[in-house]
Length: 216
Image 1 (cartoon, rainbow, N blue to C red):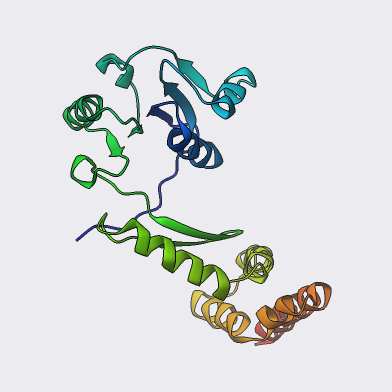
Image 2: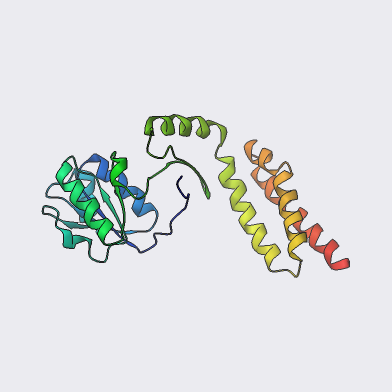
């Protein structure tokens, strides 16, 4: 059984070994999370070359060497060379580094889930490395069920949460208020593109609750 977790990678040093299309996808995901990314490969596909020229990634143009893992927090092996992948996994394991060898579950100490993202909402799907194809199918199904209205709703909820947390409201009362916001029709309003009305109603609900709390 795996322990599900979301990692904070802001400014963490990450190494991607490989310079092809798979490596490119992994690099973009890491950059989106704010990681400091180094790519190790003698050859790079053009998108990775462009990222290098723009200064968004560092590049080591050589064959993989174990000391490239020095100071690395997370490593991804995205090569088609089994021997290189083995060396990456074994050395990363020895150094207690998080590592993932793409499409080789036995040479990973973490798996990258299939993700549905709607703003601050992230839904992760994992099959423990058994069937990435099934994870992909489930992701597509969930993408239909969770539309862009969730991103707008969560943005509002974040604003309202900050407002409530600045008050003297007790924890139990805060929880009831947050639950009432989630149980309201705000999400449906965002789905109907009634964004301004939804924001106004959300703020009114919070302000009414805070006034009532102060009276009591």
